[in-house]
Image (cartoon, rainbow, N blue to C red):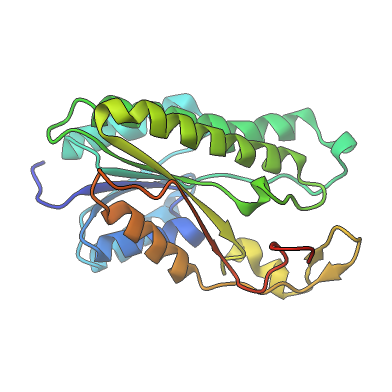
Length: 253
């Protein structure tokens, strides 16, 4: 389908940061492809995107399943014929248990969702972006400040997010030949259902205490993604931190 609006794909779009990013991109003039595992929630977000004035293709997808990723990009190309931006947002955590007690199946599931999934999505995006006209596009990875300052009992999550930083750099380098830019946004304590525990009861600190932590409105994260997505392809934000100013990250608590 021919369209004058650019096309953005958001994974993990059924709630939280993904939902906010999809709606913000729609308001900024993008048509959307949204993907997540939960179809009812995904369909609800599709209605929000359409209410913001954009077309929306909702494709239920588990990024831990390679065949579903291929289907997602095939449907994207079939409907729009191109892809300008992808936000690799989908991911998962693991139960907070001591490193030596992490189950192999939890480790593998976290690697599949947080690292292999974005890698496979990046591959599929490359295949579309390098052959389309105009050529190129932008890939935005959802990293985490946990890659630099891990929380207790988070070895699988921290390891995968550290690896995503390597994927971002490699993608930025290899994408040069095709006018593909790659960025990473590292988010600290955005207000989403996943971080409700930070405000209600608190979270475990390295010293063994449990503390309430400040959070930042998710709209600020969504606006940052829109900014990166709207840059011309000869400019790039390689890494960006968006975080609650007073959260325990900079310095020693």
